[in-house]
Every structure is written in C-alpha cells, then in structure tokens.
Image 1 (tube, rainbow, N blue to C red):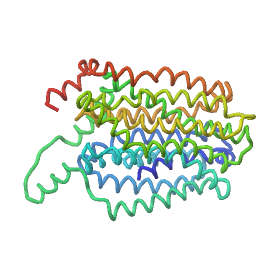
Image 2: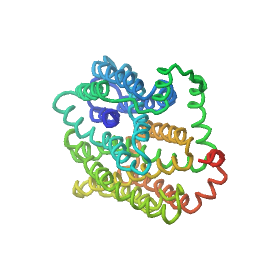
Image 3: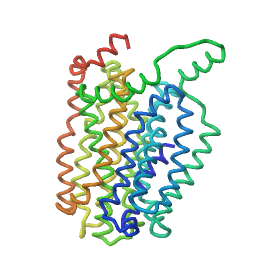
Image 4: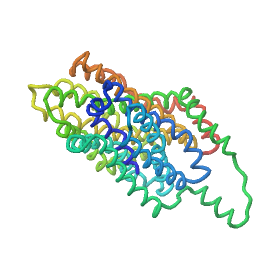
Length: 424
C-alpha cells in the first residue's frame, strides 16, 4: 500500500509537459497537481489517525484506499486542469492513511527489537515509490498518454485494495480488546471521538513549536524531503532540455537515487547492530540512534554540489546520475534514525511527534516543486543546486548536536518529562 501511494505522488511529474500542452496552462499551474496531492497527504492523518484509534486500522484502510482508487478515475478523465488538481488533492487525502497508519501496523506486529527490517522496507516503499514513478511514468506518457499514468495506478491500487479486503487483519490491539469486551457484554469507557480529534489536531502543533528537538529535526527532514520532490522538476530540466532526452529516457536518471535507497534498505540490519553497540555503551538512551547519521548527514550537501557541477554537458551524463546514489542512501537512513529517535524521545507522545514531522515534511514536498523551475532557470543548475547544498551544510551538524547535547535538551522538554513521570 505504501509503495503504491508514494508511487502515485510523483508519477504525475512524468507527464507535466504533456498536461501543460493538453490544457494550455503554464508549467507552474500543471505542477500544482503534485502540490495539492501532498497537501491532501499532509491533512489526512490529522483526521484519520484518531479515527483509526476508534474504528481500528483495518476499517480506515478499506474505506480510504477504496476512495483513493476511485479518485484515480477522476484524474484520468479530468476535463480540465482545475478538476485534475482537485482530484489530486482528494487522492492524496484518502491515500495518506495507507502510508501513515502502516507504520502503526508495523509497531503492532513486531516488537521493538525486531522492527528495524520491517521499518526499513516500509521506508523503502515510501521513498522508492516516488523515485521509480518518473521512470515508469516517462515511458507511459511517451508511448501511451499522460492519462495512462493514472490508469496504471488505478489497476495496481485496485489489486492492492482487493488483497487488503481479503487478507489484511485488524492489528490495533485496543480495538481488538474492545471488540472482545463487547462480545462478552463488558461496557467500556474511554475518550470520546471529539476529544481524540481535538488532541490529534492540536497536540502535534503544540509539540512542534515547543520542542526544539522535534522542530529542528522535522525542519531538517522536511528540507530533504522537499529536495526529493524538487528533483522531480530539476531532473527534466537537465536531461530533457539540456541533453535532449525523451521523457522516458530522462526518467531513467532517477535510477542512481533509487540504487542508493535500495542499498540503504539492504544495509539496515547492519545499522541495527550499530545501534545495539551504542545501547551497550550509552544505555537505552534515544541518542544511541544517532551515531551513524553524524557522518551520513554530510552526504546530502555533498551529493547536491556533485549533481550541480557535473550534471550539465559536456560532462558525461553518468557522473550526474551517480550523484543521486549518496543522496538516496543517506535519505533512507536519516529518515529511519530520526523517526526512531523521535519515538524514543517522546514515548506515548511519539505518534503526535511523528504526525507533526509528517505534516511538516509534506508541506515542504508540496512547495519545493513550485519554485524548482524558477530556481534552476534563474541561477542555472550549478548554482541552483549549490544554494540547496549550502542550506544542507547548515543542517548537517544537527545529528552531532543532538548526540552530544540531546540529554540536556530533553531535561527541559515538557513532553519528555511527562513521559518520565509516568515511568515510561
């Protein structure tokens, strides 16, 4: 499910130039189809997270994924750009639980000591989907039509939906216990749906702007996520406009980034061993999640400078494409480490912390593609990528800062101290 929704988020970009020609709109307006999808994706968890706690994960998966499938029909048949943009928003909105709630399902099924590989596969689906979508979408748009990008998503998501309905069990333990108590005639009380919705809508934002650890690491991840989606506009500029590649061939340029992500997924069990080593050294402190990304964080700016100054002719095309590998590798492992660190820092409030992180991330992913073409047209590819690289350099020391000073910062954290007071 996660891979299909993530795939849908960026396959749209492969047909942007054809959408522009079909509807007679500007490229910026056409790019809004990516922006609105991610804005819908950002807003969905605020509603569906508390609903899943009341009705269970399975019911939410079935209803929302079914609606996601239906909105692909709307996208494929959209008569004008306005309707396409609206359908994309609702596709992102109803597709969001299949990504955000899937992480909760993993925590339901695997104990913390065995969670690294499932989480790595989940992260791979979240990020490999957007990277490989332009590869497939480029050829689909070139040889069939940009509308067929949505028909393909419809077919694949329809198969996944059928499998979900037939085989996916309920995994949320409180829901299972409530159902068991109901069958036994036991009356249970708990927080109302209204109170859970209010908590879901307010607590992530209260935490985001009150917790330095959460704010800075969420800003860091949002920036990297924004670059990922900005690349979906940058790569066509480089490889279609500067090298005269067709959309299908230009989509293959994302394979460097995808290869790095695949290697990171394979390496995740070894990262778990590094974490175990530091748990022995530091004790079960959240900072044991950070040592390896102290180095990896520097690969992000390095890859941006590498791409910026090697992507254009006359330098051979393979040099710029390979620059995506360290970016993809570090992106996956940074995401895994930071989400695990936030979960360890905030315990029972971890879901709210991750919700704030996800919303922040999606907003950056929605906005960055809008200014990407202006950035590269105005500054050129070398200096446009270098500007992003300088920002990435400013963020790179954050893992080191929190590794050394995180314990002291957490002592001033309201939510961390509330967790400690509860003996968690």
